[in-house]
Length: 446
Ligand code: UDP
Image (cartoon, rainbow, N blue to C red; front, side):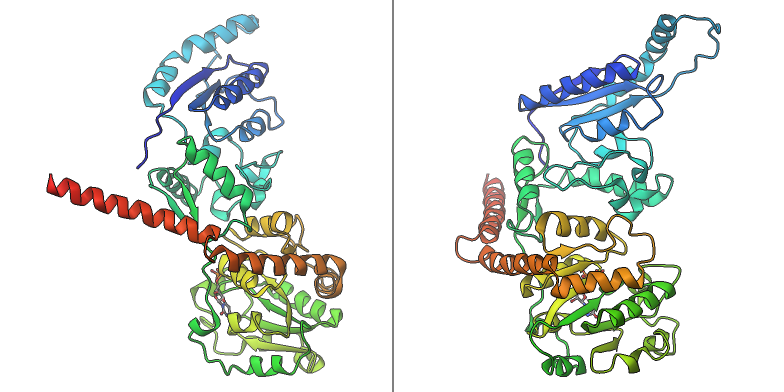
């Protein structure tokens, strides 16, 4: 692991919201000095103004500022008419043991589990977006599912895991500079200051047509051969994505109403779980997923669209000249495969980190349109589905996303060309490994 060689300053804000604000500003300036990290300590007593402040403020602090809250101390033994000064100073006095404990256990912040300490409400209730270094602002509700319930054991597993990330010597990431330039640059700055281990963007690594091992003669490819260039919308929610009965019916009706050509990988619906297919599609079903489609759908859309059960050779499909758009759950592999093929996306996130990907793809990379907008939890109506699909395939926004997809396809190819960013990043990792190996040899020799 990498130990940051930085000074660590603990700032204690007096009880009361009004003290936290300037202290937070001071903390911000302290760490702006470089090579200094800070912990901002506040009191639980008198800290809630009842409208999300100051946890919203805390969430906007840079990652080199961590925060800690001293536990609330009881004041009910004070007389009812005790002055505010008495109350405040009693809090200060009674909190001393907690402060000592905190100082004894306090270690420099590193961002791992940061948000966990700086906020107390559920993330979806945060009034302000979460601003992570170099990332598009994220609504708390867009963060990964296991972080949406602090009482769930999965929440704590994830926070502990995030803290342990800081012990790594570095991260090898399947992305590339042109796709996530700001985030990669922010990581570089922060790792330079010892806040995070370095991140090496060495991607994109995605399957190529020949590496999929799939039967290239899948019927849907023959069907695609008969369709005009860029005319078909490919609809697939990864290996695990699952729609509810109602959503499946709306999607079908919307596809039909849009009049766009489509190739849809249809799964068994589930009203319980958006990742039901993850545990093996068809599990517990003896029938055909296509039988869950609306009555007469397959017949009515014959010639216009093709519904296939369970699985399609996605890499081959995306790189087929007939495919012009991709309705995707925004799984990372699917995303990189769309990039490699230069196909724009309609972001339809379902679970895991897919909402974060969707926001990034729509608002930063420009590769995706996001029809469900800010409400991923409600059923998307057939009208919305039809409008979004039409926009992606023949609208102006779709054309812009298509242009962006082509640019990214070029950039992805360049990333691994000679002197490409990903190739260089990978050579840097390899250099570290070689250094470590040489050092090990030397120390064995000594
Ligand atoms: N995939 C496929 N055919 C399908 C569904 C998925 O080939 O019908 C492949 C897809 O090409 C990708 C992977 O399965 O490589 C899904 O990975 P991703 O990260 O997109 O989503 P996840 O399945 O992990 O949610």
